[in-house]
Image 1 (cartoon, rainbow, N blue to C red):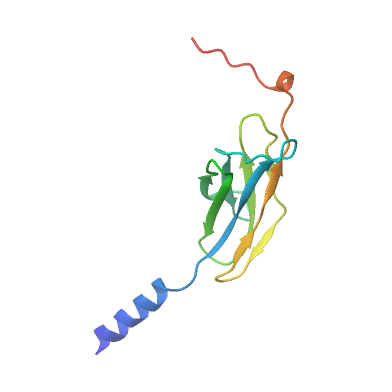
Image 2: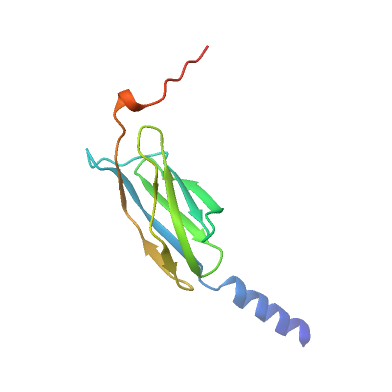
Length: 115
């Protein structure tokens, strides 16, 4: 009997809805999707919890390990990096966070020499 109770608790825990943030990254100038943007979920201390990359359509999604306060950091070559304001994520909640990134003028980009 105890084994069935333990199994039931384990199954219920695995079926609990996760909390997440998803959205689309676009260029502020063109409105086009920005693929390959690194999206990091940060804890309140600024440490990375998880990361993903936006797909070719600019879509991304990250799961938070627990309800709480998080920030998102967006990094992609050719665009200004951005850290969101704090996001409060409740248990089982999925937040929509669409974002427009600002392109950096080519003359301000670092030079990269490949030999």
